[in-house]
Length: 311
Image 1 (tube, rainbow, N blue to C red):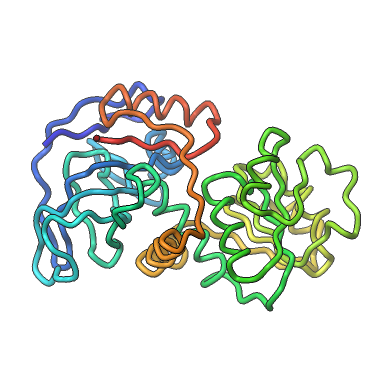
Image 2 (cartoon, rainbow, N blue to C red):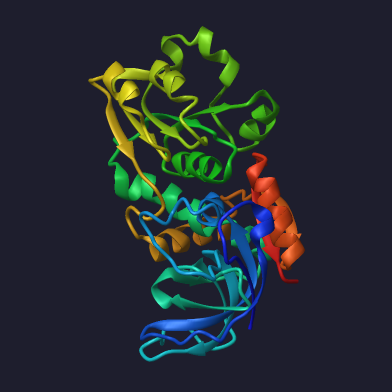
């Protein structure tokens, strides 16, 4: 089967065509023919060799976790779906391939009305956003929740879930994304250059840092009340922790709570009820050239979810 992977670590140009054998299935797994795959920052870290310490792998390596595809084969005990159904979910690895084995527990049926690219944009961002509210924290009702990076893949879903749960939401975005934050029904919208003008009206008890890197964490402290909660998708340096000893700090990633099936069912139900706005920033063809271009855009700090499509 054809796949797009690499035999050395480096930049986007390390990707090459690979001809690999069809993978064997373990109990509870299904073989899915990939129709679309979401490109994630984790894919780039894998390509650069930065995941090897925690997750060592041998070459050739084929990245890709966020997939949409058609079930073509089922292993033993994989009886929750039928061959021919189109599913959304998370593979362990290998989504940049023609076929990928997946656990049935990490897949859900794709609604016919959900476009292919939008479906591929859901697995990792949707799981993380869901886990913020149903795994990492237990928030009282009617909170004002601040989301930094509120128009990104994770941030936009976090903001929308907050609103669906009856919370108020304050978005912090770059100036060019203020209109998008308003479209997502944020109750208040701040920009990063607003940092010098934060007042008590903007301070909240719960803040989600869904932006990349730690550049905005000092502003996050300024936006929090003295005993608030700061949940970050990126590492929180000791200097930030020491500067606010009464703040509760939570670091999380998409592997923290392993609620993929529940999360995706929740997100798909929201979409079916017309309550979820999924934005795709860019699509590329599911080809070697498309993979390389997608990773170049990812490395350049491209804003918005990048999807490889096979249609």
